[in-house]
Length: 218
Image 1 (cartoon, one colour):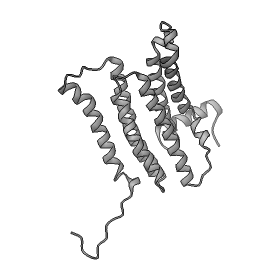
Image 2 (cartoon, one colour):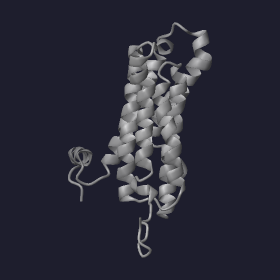
Image 3 (cartoon, helix red, strand yellow):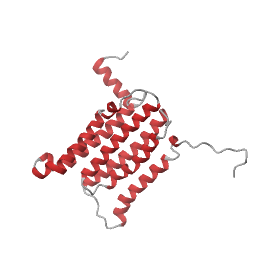
Image 4 (tube, helix red, strand yellow):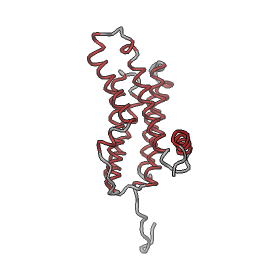
């Protein structure tokens, strides 16, 4: 019990007091729907491609957890919109894992929504800091374009083109090509974020490449 003179410490959702347990619940839910279900029930083990989807989904979930903490550590959340978007993203992360047995087009659509919300999160961050960084400029970063193109490509194949040209290689391997592009977009995003932090390995690699191509930076 608190004494009458003691005060409760303020709860700051940007520090992880709320988000960390929710990330833990998301991971536990995904594990229950995949590994636990495969071992304890009659659900068949996934195909190789299904296992790749699950693996990429877990990697994205964990990288998002780390990325969230790095971002709010450098630029703490001041308003509620970024926090709300984080909460909305959590079930989407779970979907990218547990939809492994469904047509991949639904997983690709989920990733497109995630990349859009990530950019919207960034947009609200700049609004909080009163910095000018256009919404469409954020949406047209290369990793976003890769993710959106992957989603559009698989949607066209699944809902239209694949019905008329099922034997073409870009139709047969559309799922595999799409997951490769999404994986590249995820890692490209995370490396781009790290490359902006002085002293990080990605920043040093980026600096050395710039020096090699353009000479010492002044």
